[in-house]
Length: 114
Image: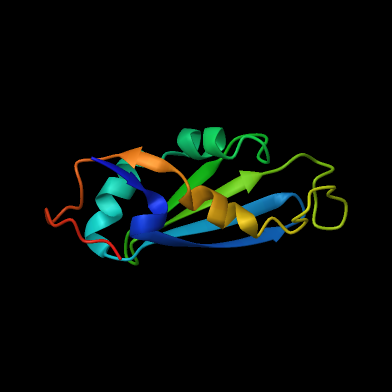
């Protein structure tokens, strides 16, 4: 099945300098294994390629069922120097939620989403 992240998860984003951090948290923990399998650093880098440059690093927070992505931006794309409309990059979390993944579904077999 194909599912848009927006339908199964929410995101929070923060930034310091030219680094953005995006937390991806499923509404239902049963979706966490599917997110771990499908939302790879490479997939995130490709999806956000218009704003992210460099290697995306993913951290798994298995105890709270969340993924953290650290996304570098260009050296001149910082909170104080960026020419982008969203200089703080807070919208990257919303942009990530537009990603569609191919998955077998949640771990418990339900189609639970919000």
